[in-house]
Image (cartoon, rainbow, N blue to C red; front, side, top):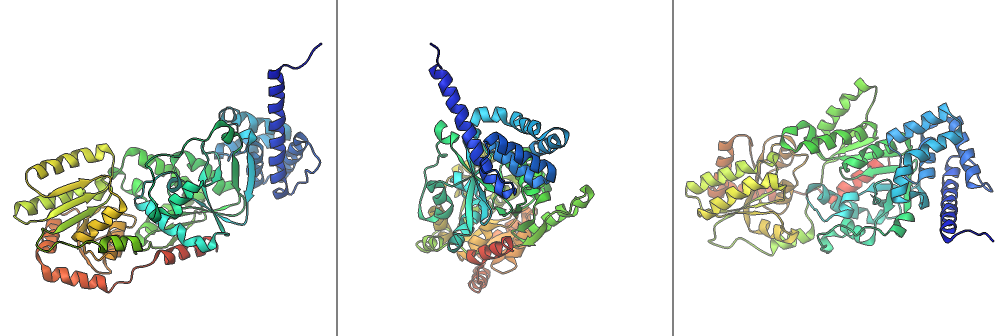
Length: 507
């Protein structure tokens, strides 16, 4: 008597489940490709779809067929291989090429069991980093202010993140939605999301952008840039991006080499995008300069539109700042907010503070912002040495939002003499909280400062920085003038910014 062993039965069950999952995915993509596969087995459906795509020569159809077969988004190389295989061999052989290219990946992630959903009538909004992590500086502040303003358009857009192996989009978990939509209402543990179980990975549900609109709201991770480029080139989806700055390329000497390399790959997405929304005129000009070089590659490039960031702060920030005030008779507080990296120019601010301290001026200067250990080690040693010598100087690397806003409430003025910014949120936030600023006299910082409330300097001129900070400390009349200029300002709201972006993306 013969029979199948339990192991053989298990393999047979796995093969059957894989076949069923493939058939279900092909049934999802077939209508979009205009192919009837009703009543066909998965292998018959695959053959019919492959023949149709081969006959059409349509790159977007090939892109979708790849997704249907593998449940993963193809890289540009993957798609080129499929299209060439369709031209060089029979459709069945071409499908083998696809499966061979993804076999190693499938062995690791079991993508063959995944399900698909084509997203065709909603705007997909890629908020991957904000969904996964609690980091909350410039880009994250923009996303976490903007996206909640679309609450009344909940049926028209969908927030997505990359799945665990970065081969497709998925819906956010409840916690991840909170990180994006309710940042000001909650606080989160400083940890990554737990990994999915093997069973969950095997049954992941992949959201597929298909001839719709995709807004990349952040600067994507290096390893998804090529996949996003493939979406922009081949999926028939209009890909728009918020253009924060071109600092890693234009000011490469001020950032780690890895950042410049990552940005170079990010620019490949830009080449094939529909639009880039510069967060300032200055940032827009940088991207327009990059686009101007594309005709030499036979490309037109995206339209670059200036959508200047909002300059308001949240009611919670205003309340936290208003809850404290400078103590009468206490030494004035000088605040310097910004991640610690060479272009932020904190060394110049610290030098100016040290010189003013030696002149006999009394004040407390507080630096707030994170940074790599390489960037902060020397600076923090200088701060510690000056503090030990009697100077009132502090450097905080991990400070909560409420603590930061409270510092603004006590500050006489802030200093932000950066060498290169896409926008300069610390300046806008300082002004919105009624605190005058010493800042740079060019680029995006000049765009903000020209509205009033600032003393502008050449940030490369140490003497100019010292003179401006001395004026802020000693000239009460000038300080009152700046406060008066701030009082007359009407900050741009995040609702206004979000509406401008939405109108452009859905145009």
